[in-house]
Length: 448
Image 1 (spheres, helix red, strand yellow):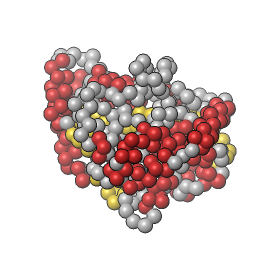
Image 2 (cartoon, helix red, strand yellow):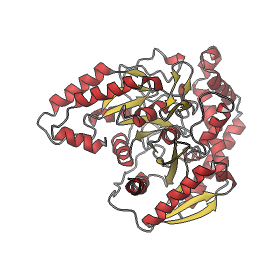
Image 3 (tube, helix red, strand yellow):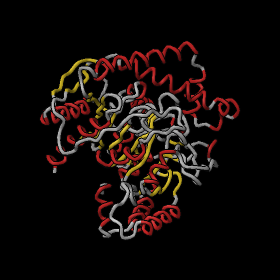
Image 4 (cartoon, rainbow, N blue to C red):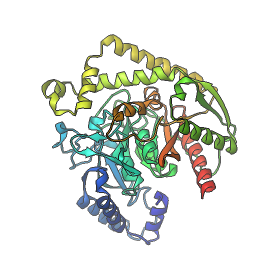
């Protein structure tokens, strides 16, 4: 159910928050084998629902997320709940206060139902957590959900919640969104506060929403994107309203081609071609050209991520490396071995990449490309780890550049969801969602 429809039912007194929250917990229980949650807060959720019912009795001017059940990635603090980060190091870490984004959700009337599973310390994209169990793909439980925000994607894809929060350092919102068939929105770097969010990489971390449709993702983003003067990484920027009733005129779109892009499943590339044709049908001009420098951007993003993660976890890695899962420990050790010279070169690439995109967006309004190059890999089996390493190929370059990017579910391959990624210039999330919503609307109408 869309957020506006749910809030509308509440306003008409046709539904009560306690009733809807109860239904969500029933769905969570029925699908607990998927491993979407690390912890739940039934008592807290029902208490909030009761408070909302009493506070807004006989009022129709309800806040934007009134009574909306939302899940929060277990990297983000919710007061009085544990923030484990999917790690043994934080298994008893009870948050003393809400993260800034959670404060905004609560002010808007949201009901937090629990903390979702993630790849340990968010350093990975499979969500095969060795400490809290794997998070399984709802379309095929033998396959990964993607990560690191896998639990949030699964919770939305199965209607356990209406929306969820995730974090994205190399694709961790968009990858699970693509593999599970939901919308995932990574905003401009600095648009959303990261205060109260356990860091992975200070210069690459983003917080954003996952939802079943573009409009819901936008609704949540608008709530959480306020400037936070206590967060040194928060940036002040106006947010424009999209016009969901029309497609923007004169829009020019670039579809990257060439060797770098071709390293994707041909069937996914055909899906991107189909999405490009939808854009043309809506009135956009779509052009093709190679952007081979995206490969360097993605590689530099990976190096910065591992080096900064190793810096943040340096004492834990030095004193108790055995408490980390094998894959995360290996990546942290690789990060710790990065030289200052290599890190400096990666940061130089970051500056060059931003400049390259700045020049590119003088000519184009939007990019369209695959979100991930393959469908969800198996959790286990020969080649599973190697396949998973490919998942950040088309996402990481938009972390190092800080550009807003969105995954839109678009078709299936072998019965599994595939996603198309839209990217636009800094601070233009309004254009991003306006275009994605138009595509979503037309495709849903055509296929219905």
